[in-house]
Length: 291
Image 1 (spheres, rainbow, N blue to C red):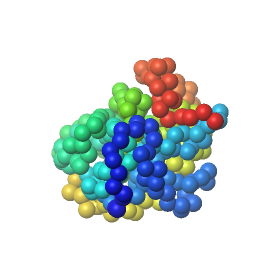
Image 2 (image 1 turned 90 degrees about the vertical axis):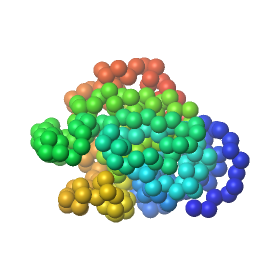
Image 3 (image 1 turned 45 degrees about the horizontal axis):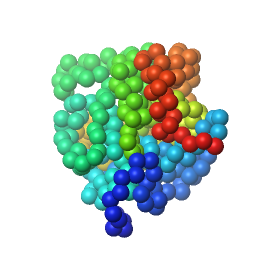
Image 4 (image 1 turned 60 degrees about the vertical axis):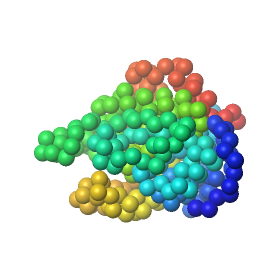
């Protein structure tokens, strides 16, 4: 990607170069333009600014980004994310085993970028028979949690299995000096849930949260193509039907409904797991602007 040569300026809350957030107008989001960020080495990257807040106002551009795997970022991508958009915190939701297999990523050695690891899946180690059995058991629990949609049950499992990591991820978003970039492997499931919790906690309209989640459907084929070429993810991707990777709005709608019915809402769940009023204030200050 060719970008203008620009001096390095640290501006925590807004992009240095307003054109850095390149918009792809694909009609994905009914409430407005979906702000895809075009990179060479990642395909499911977008900014979460401009989303409507239920009681007025919008989320702020350049403060929270979401992405798929960042292992293949080009030097131009790193420049775009750090110098022009202002990413200062990477919130990585992958497992420790994924990190070990994938090795260092291009953003790891960038000065001024803080890396926070919050695995939201149970840490079951390497690919052994014990792990396979653990994964089968988890799949059974996913179906039990929400029989109508096992993917929704899987998402609820993040809250049951790793509540400390989910809350920690939201705290790191709130405390980021500049933009926080949340990612996993595909940027749709683990990332989709953590982002949905953050947006819902600060009052983003529920339909906008669902639309943002569902927008990854436009990039699923490209994501699968990338992961299929990976020695880490290729075997797993190849063993599952393509339908298992689909992103459906009803999955997130059901997840948010379950948050309301089981926990009294996202705010209630967060408060029950140590996310304080001050944490919420910081998250709101990070993501929101007044109407």
